[in-house]
Length: 131
Image 1 (cartoon, one colour):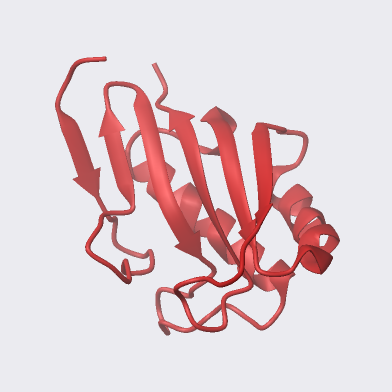
Image 2 (cartoon, rainbow, N blue to C red):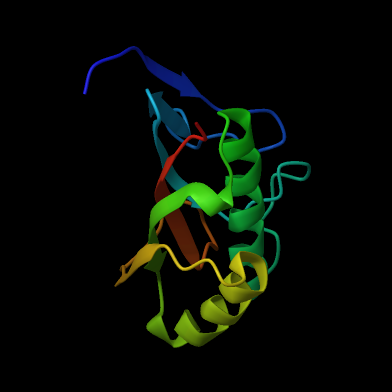
């Protein structure tokens, strides 16, 4: 794959908590690094539940994808990193409420901890741009 790699973090999304951009795009290929369920207005987690944090993450993905000419319908794969697998069902319920019938490939992984204090999960994804 050749081309110029574009890095970005669009407005109205959480600021990265480390030295990285949320989005990397080359050609039609898009990756979005780990995103926690942080409300970009307050800088705080969207809520104490896996459902609230999942919905915030998916909302952020929507904004990020739109900023590079894509959308949730063009997601190829999502990784879900859960601090507690007991939150799996709650995350899935929120996930389906946002993703609807779209079912990109997905991996759920249990992790010991996450960089954002209080986060119950993070997600990252791979997508393609339209056209």
